[in-house]
Image (tube, rainbow over all chains, first blue to last red; front, top):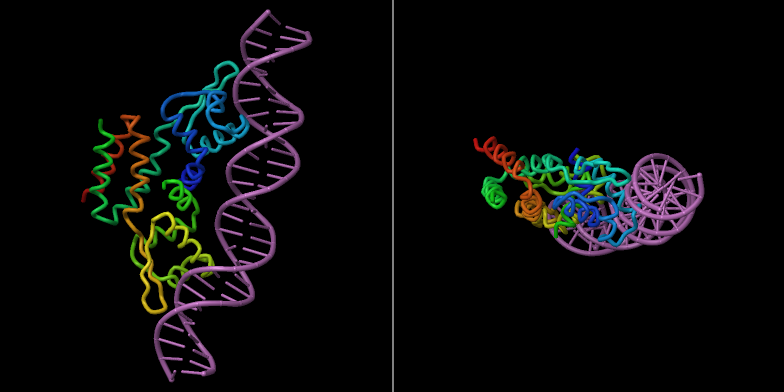
Length: 103
Length: 103
DNA sequence: CAGTTTCATAAGTAATCGCTTATTTATAGC
DNA sequence: GCTATAAATAAGCGATTACTTATGAAACTG
C-alpha cells in the first residue's frame, strides 16, 4: 500500500532511480552508469520500486528496460488529498499543484 | 528537504501519529494512549516528524501539545508536481480528486 | 561451440531503525 | 520542602536496510 510507497521513495538513491525513469525508459546498465553504486544495488532498488508499483519492466533480449509507472503515484496523491482535505487552506495549494502540472 | 519527509512518513506508527495530529492538537500522553507503543517511542517519533517539518509543539505547563503543520506537506506536493507533470493523464486524476473534495 | 554481456540472486556486513527500560528535567500540588 | 506527573533523553538491543562481492542464468556474438 502507501506503506511501501513512502518507504520506496525514502531512500535517496532509489528516488534518484525513479526520477530518472520518470524522464524516460532505461535499462539497468544505463542506470548503473550514472548512479555510483554497483549493478546489483541498482537491481535491488528496481525490485523495491517494482514492489511498490512505481516501475514496470520490459525485457528485450538480454536487457531489461524499466520505466516509471505514472499510476504508481496515485495512492500518494490520494493520501495527500485525504490528509490536506482537513485544512481548507491547503486545498488552494492543491489547486496550485494542479495548475503547475497543467502545462 | 523531501528526504526527511519521505522517511518520516515511511514508518506506519509515525504516519499514524501524524494523521492523528492532522485531525487536531494532542499532547504526548494522549497519543501514547492510543498507539500501543511506550511514551519514549512516541516522543522519538514526534522528534522525527518535527525534524521533517511536519509537526510543531506548544508547551503548556508540563504538557506538550503537538499539531500537524499543514505546510509541511508542501515539499511533497512540489515533488509530485515536478515528477508527475511529465504524464498528462495524471493531471486528470488530480482534477477528479479536487472535484470530489469540493463539497 | 566457447566467450561475453546483461541482469538477477545469494550471502555477508556495517550502519541505521524502532523499540524497550532506565534516568533526567521540568512543572504542579500538597 | 516532598511527591507525583509529563515529557525528553540516554543506553542498549534485535531487526531491518543498503550496500558489497561472488555466483547464476539467459541471451547475443564470433
